[in-house]
Image 1 (tube, protein in one colour):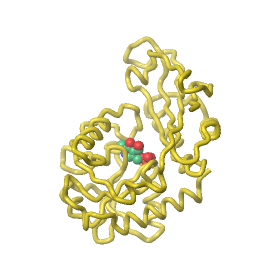
Image 2 (spheres, protein in one colour):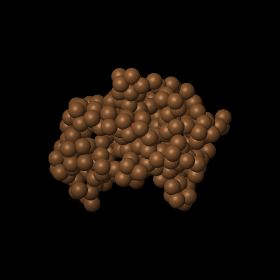
Image 3 (cartoon, rainbow, N blue to C red):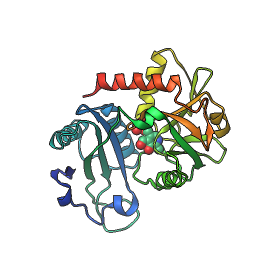
Amino acid sequence: RTVYVNGEFVAEEAAKISVFDRGFIFADGVYEVSSVIGGKLIDNAAHLARLARSCKALSIDLPASGDEITAIQKELITRNDLDEGVVYLQVTRGAADRDFPFPKVATPSLVMFTQVKTLVASKAAEAGIRVITTPDLRWGRCDIKTVQLLGAVLAKQAAADAGVDDAWFVDAGGDVTEGSSNNAYIVKDGRIITRALSTALLPGITRASVVKLAAETGMTIEERPFTVAEAQGADEAFVTSATTFVTPVIRIDGAKVGAGTPGPVARRLREIYINHALKTAV
Ligand code: PLP
């Protein structure tokens, strides 16, 4: 596999990053994951816009323009002959002697790699996933897509230990914030309910597309918090992300959601989203 590191395409075995890179030392960096179907990028312009926003929030100078980044993403897709999967990209503040404040001189690092993944014909989407809920122990700026992902790592490990697929974070007030690496939704009486954007959750690119597509289709979206009990009593539940598109949730903490099988709203939204992805991929 060829990866991209600071201006160069190299074999993954030959790729090098400094041990003083602040991404490694402080998780002082941000990332994006764009999906690829048929060798083309999905919703990529929106991912790069969020990358710019994340960098701005942390005063990291993006080391390349959006067009330059897209060209690198495409070159990696070509070199790795990627048909379906993801392009991961990460920007960190760069390498400097270890000290907390921003270094006076540091050149941001830009790293990208590809991963092969089956996205469209997903078994998880077909069967639906089971989630547990877990206290949201993350920091106060979950709207920035930083590489500090220990909250998600521990939540996903807890899910694996419990023998289920994923975890939903629950805030101190008992409301669901989002999934460990996706946005969370429930459906009740035909209405789609998802938490409004704030510093408590990531503004998902797939969320933005799905909310827009659902509205265009005449579906009703209610942006408000919901509790675990409300989710367990909903007709349907689902998650969205770049890699899962729209994936039904069939059990929450062991309780069946609706009939305990993927519901019609989630199925329909998945179909609509994939159509949009295929139509707009570049
Ligand atoms: N929420 C969190 C915490 C995430 O990590 C992700 C994606 O990785 C999402 C939501 C979904 O965002 P997107 O649709 O942009 O992939």
